Length: 332
Image 1 (spheres, rainbow, N blue to C red):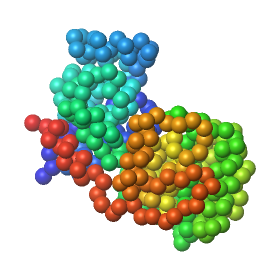
Image 2: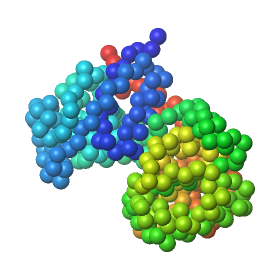
Image 3: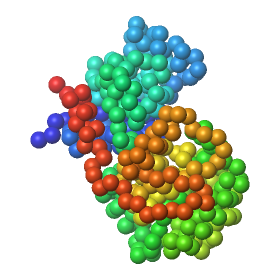
Image 4: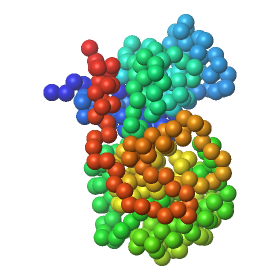
């Protein structure tokens, strides 16, 4: 019989961060009987608080500091574990773990907090600190089986069963990259070329960061006959990334979106990281992308490149992570 684990998931309302936290909570359900309570906690006056809290956190009352420096609707019952992702949740993570006297797991930048503030600090690249656990890839909100089931339902609902479909998932300005209309136009023309060469059609999803102008440029360059289904975010928000991933043979993701890249890898898709735009991500971000490629989890391509077929490794991605994490969080 699995041991019960009540998880307090602290959210900053950033979709990529929340999906990672929910994904880890889902994975912990393989080892524990989990109950998840989610609370949104947003930092007040971020620039000031980021300087003050590292100085105050060791000496003040944790619950009082949490309530003073965060906007939140309240707290649930006493948890066995505090879990969060994203640097803006780091202080809330530590303060609530100290208030509830329970372990805590964090994914993201520690915001000048010592490694020992966390029972486990999960990263893609090693920090060589006492509580650091290195992940091959960040967990996503759904398993490979769940994505396949959602994909099959999507194909049936839209009369697309039997078609060869590839997915293009578009982010936008971020992670050191910026996109002009010309970049989106070139991307659309490249997609036309790939569709004709490989005999596929596209599933397309833009995002909030793509923007109206970017969507207009991409859409204007695409051959409508080569698009099987599209989510144009500025016109209609459809949160169906899991269904689109499940329906597609492979996923092309713009290089700025680590969350969508990770989600595609996590459900076992052949992920192509598309490099376009101006600027360049920082070294840690590029190291993470290089790691995915080194492990055979993704491939990189620039707009205009040819695309070779590849299969991602057919091995469990998260078993070693759970093995390392379990002894740090197991309730007494």
